[in-house]
Image 1 (cartoon, helix red, strand yellow):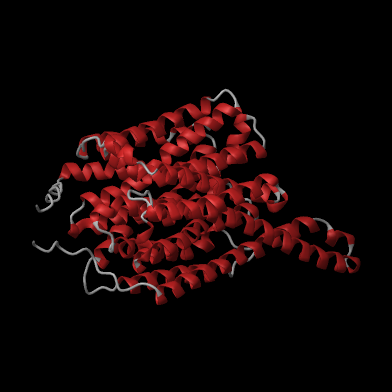
Image 2 (cartoon, rainbow, N blue to C red; image 1 turned 120 degrees about the horizontal axis):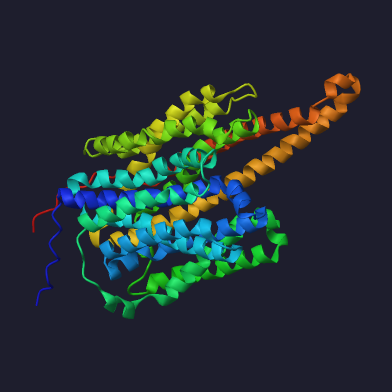
Length: 504
């Protein structure tokens, strides 16, 4: 007896397109909220009456919950129906955001941020799942370009929003700004996405061992990394315990997923060269995208005394054009005669030129000196991310979409956490190094200088140390880009855009 035919694909209509827009809005809001609260953390701590130590735990708990949720979101979406799960997650994300500023104590705030992190982590994987499942072959790349905006548009829009609500406005808007967008996204999802039946029988096959190992491993890793610098890494029993726990749980998770009949991660997908290449390179590029807006803003704040609102136009230079550039890149590579590997290489070259130009900064640079290089970043980022997604997902069958979405999103979320930790530690370490070297040189020469010349010496040393630090940061980005280019040359086969289905 022949197996039953697969279910007929859902026709792509304007109503379904609105549903996809709703998922896109919810996913973008999730990523933006994460970055906004991180950027404005110092202001938030002051309004809550908390110290830096307490605030760092709140950030770590949110990040751990968010990354862990990305691991299980696609499985839950298939089991509980994608439409129903997306609506509930979007409403929950908004509700916990409303409640956070009203928390009466630290314990309640921590619990609300964990719950909001879980709800927020559920949303980005749904966008990729929806794009791979519902979009017909000839417009699938445009759906992936929408997902790419969560890596290019969202992070760069976070700084302007944090500046807008953090200066002169009610600080609670840093949490409440998500509510209108979430309500709109949930309404579009409810209107546009088809309602799948519940598949509660899947709970009998739940990979509970993999879920426990994966969630525990990722959470411990995120907490260990985000608390490492503050607690002095291996000198802290807490950090050592977290890292050792992650080192035990994550390998066991991979082994479990390899043999489980219905895994959360289909580890076998990594044997496909283009898929593993796409994930690896996307994880590296997350660091580029984060640093592209963080380093200029950090320089202007530390050296020139700019407030976040004054640095905002630089981030908007990258963010806003992505609404047009990402679909434009998808249109270009959606042709068989265009080799997307060359598009990636061209994008990396533009970003490398931007980093090389920014590395020439001096203490005299102001905001206007960064615009040219921000434009290069603006052009280069979608030229890298959109073809990367096409490369990774081009070897994924529609039924494998939830597995691919879980892997791509959880690893990308982990990479975003790693990038934030690496960037913060890099800036701190290099600033201390340059400050010590410059101060030693200044003290050696101070005996030959008149007293008037030594006034304000510490301030000048600090300023120049930050200039050298941010120049080093742009040079470090060149090293990451070189690694990405090396991987690009050696690993991927040529990907082709989605093709029409072959008639049976």
